[in-house]
Image (cartoon, one colour):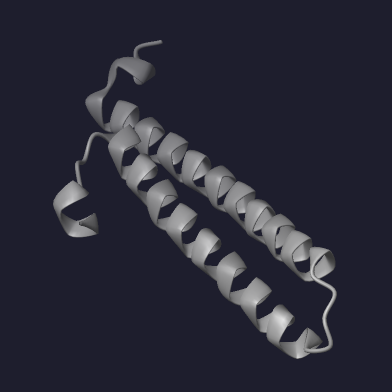
Length: 88
């Protein structure tokens, strides 16, 4: 129990928790982006299927990168670092 009271170990555990939170949020954002892309490409029946696929990919990528940036922000916030100015 004395080891957990060490400030270095406490900060290391905070960093590991932040990495885990960030990784989980990025995986969730990848899943959501893929889901949105599938919904866009399946719901639109068109003669221009290539254009629909490109739009689906674009929207999916935008969602993924936006949510990934938010995930990194949450990870840094969990450690106690505010990077809001850098993200803005």
